[in-house]
Length: 310
Image (cartoon, rainbow, N blue to C red; front, side):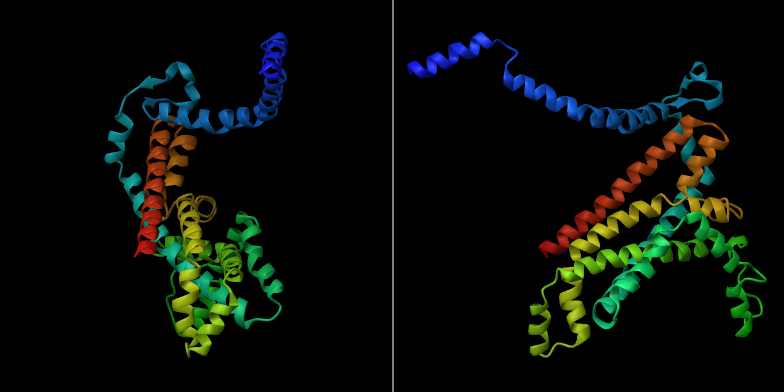
């Protein structure tokens, strides 16, 4: 007890600024740049956009022209036909690109994993579109989709289709054409992630299934798909988020047209914020998009969790 009391006295002599607090301050100083960056580049813009969503602010006029309008921007949204058109296109885009992209990527991953030699080469070849510039990819596909001289329509006319779709300049097919590009571009990334998941499945499970007489298709349905569930969930959520952020392909290829046929929410936000300079209304739409992404991702997560319990 005497030794403990002596150490306590020595600690009190050192005062409040002891070694423990010095080390704590040094640690916080190391964390400060990251914390300042998060606050300045993430938290503050997020909160500022929330504030702007309740205002009517023309970006060119400066802060002196900012006017608080409450829920006026959200009420305006309910009557904005272009907003609802963009939301409809976004949901359509997500409903098509996410399941079709993941199904194709999973099948290709299984084929590369089990049936193909030189796997590393195929991984690189399929991954190249994902890391290439989206603008460059869009330029190539714009040439492929050309209504009269593009290779796609030339092929269709060669097999007897006299009036093939005009693709990017056709209001009925413009969004479909962009979906094809989006699925193709993301295919390599999704396939690589599925391949990583496949390598984690023990080969002993497949050997036991083969001994029991399971066919390849039965193994795929009963082993591969259930074992890839965590990977599929990760890709589903990230792909959903990516589908709601699609912008560059639409801006380069169609600029939201023709007749708003390929307008999506992000393009509508860009149009209001950086063309019409109506930052308040653009911020309100961005928050609706943010809540929509959270809702869709949460539903996907909950459905996956209930599937596991079942």
